[in-house]
Length: 459
Image (cartoon, rainbow, N blue to C red; front, side, top):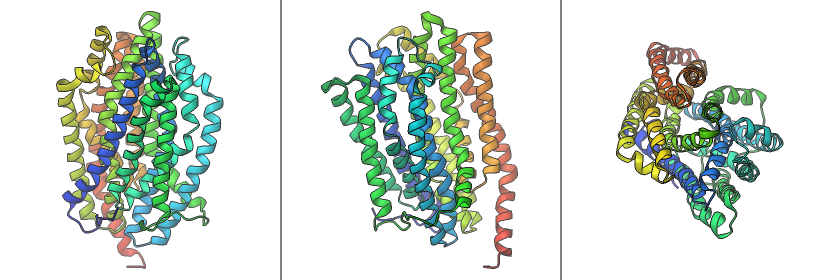
């Protein structure tokens, strides 16, 4: 549990790898659980594929709810990291306390609002008359554990921010492993079906939350959770900075929801449910790409924020460049895995040859441009880690805007299956603009930081 990473002095390549690999593995294990969960659901006798479609409808909504954890977690950690780089521990502790309170309040509000709106939301987001019962059963159980999900995910960011990357990994893996164990017990032994899958998730998230809070209230951490000293200015800065990662996750899931609705609409009664099930499989594979990728780019934000706060701009530049190459390298590996293991991955969900063929075709389309997508993640999360929301937010929305326009226009001219081409279109146009903006403005941002610190009375 001891801290082993000196964010301001350790060699950049070694430091990035020691933080990125545990963060990546934690997200990989988490997405592995998500896939196993869907495999168990698809194995429910007689109704497996319909149940999978129902859970697939819930998936984006559930993730959108959890995205509020990143609104606060990734919104607060760059501010805390910069404060630690400035050697202002008191300020860092105040930021952590404010973020903890914000997550608690958000959990209660979200639980009430989303539960009351569950039926219109599920209907709007792609649940048919046949799949609605499975979607509602899963969703109602899961939403009761919102506070566990938000606190475990959001507060874990503050563990990683202090350099405890392995502890953050343990927190994620604890919940994930417990979830994998509980899934078959709840679904098959207690015969709870999709409700059992949701209940297993809630119990596991509670265990992860208790681990995270025990660490942040305990003696091993450098910055602890405290009560009081709440400041609206800090809260507003957290919300402003966290809006970029929140928007990325929330809009991504709105896109998936919109895709499900469009697939139902353009697929019609004959193919609608089949295409939604296909999209659930495709998005499961995309999670294998994007969640570990986000673990690399998001987990290493602490290196950038700390050194930006310490005004060590040379280390910021070296770390940012290394992280971009690491993200691109991971996605290159995943691009190869599409063709080496894609059919095997799909066989975990279905034995229907028509569904399997359609899913493999869709996965190949969606991953056509994932290598530049890796660079996009590194740039957006890197700029956010340095507090440059005025750059990261427009770049994020640009890619989302391209995606959003594409998913609505493509099926109008080329049919329901063409929706999947929205992914590579946005994965090319998004990174092109991001690379240009990063090269043009990042040197100016770092130069401005050096000048401002040089003029500061403390220097």
